[in-house]
Structures are given as structure tokens and as C-alpha cells.
Length: 217
Image (cartoon, rainbow, N blue to C red):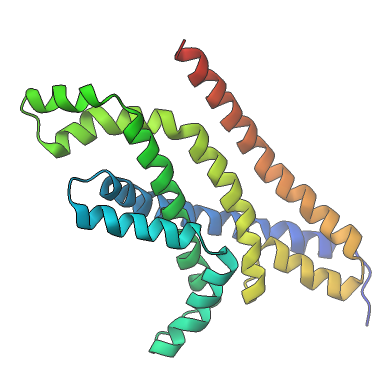
């Protein structure tokens, strides 16, 4: 039976936004922790850590996110670990975010003049103090525009969770579209909602970039 598109169907779509935001927040939070570790490994003096971080980045940047979702969701049960769809998506997006944020923050750390490292070491500061007190605060400021830009991509990437049946914004739209047979209307609304989520972040990232470029003059 075909249902008319009404207020209830609209609310189903709008309420799914919270799951898209929640999934993005989980992936970004986990990816921030993982990304920081990957960035620190990439600039480490230990060759083994650098090789591991480089391999991690190349694997997750060099393969499609959809394939990563499938490998985790369908691959883990093969080794006896069964995970629900939301957990599989969260793990895949977190690993994906860790690789990209790690690369972004590695670049920001290496953008800091080498003389600051040498000056801090000459003062007798330990590696931990050098990073936390001197290098990372500057690198964080440099990386902010690129980090915000990646967050926009991550938010849009959550739409792939629909493939695994997780009901976020895109999946809710598929369900409503199948019930109402109004795909143009339904996905037009979904596109608008994604735009309303992403555009302010894109604008914020652009303003940060402009401020940093003006501050560097």
C-alpha cells in the first residue's frame, strides 16, 4: 500500500538527522584520538612507528570507505566477532578518520620550523613537554581549516551506513521513499538537510583559513 507523504514521514526523516550527527561525532572523536597517535608516529624518531603509521594511512586512504565498511561488517564475524551495524560503521569511520586526520596533523606538525624543536631541546625539555607545550598548540591552529573541511566530508560519508541497514538520514529517506513512492521529494529534502548540516561547517572552515592567512602576513 502506497502511503501519502505527510508530516509523519517528514518527521521520520528529520529525526534521523540526530543519528547522522551522533555517528559523525563518534567517528570524529575516535578519529581525533587515533589521528593524533598516527601523526605522532609519523614524526617519531623510531622507524618502526613511522612505517606502521605510513602503512595505516596508505591502506585507509587508498581504499574506498564502502569497502572498509564491508570488510569490518562482514569480515569480523568470520573470525568470531559479531558486531551490530552501528558499531561496524563507527569502527570503519573512526579508522578512516584516523588516517586522514593523522595525515593532516602530521603535515601541521612538520610545518612548525625545525628551529623550535632544536631550541626546546637545547633548554632541556623532554619530548612530551616539547610536543604538548610548544608544538601541538601551534600545529592545532595551522590544521584547523583542513580539520573542519574533513569533518564535512566525514559527515557526508556517514550516508554509506545506509548500505548496512543502519538508519541514519539516507537510510530513513530510502524507507520513506519506498513507502510513498516520492523519491524526488524525499531525497530533495535529504539533500537540503545535508546542505544545512555541511554548509555552516564549510563556511566556518573558510573563515578560519582566511583569518590564518591574514595573521601570517
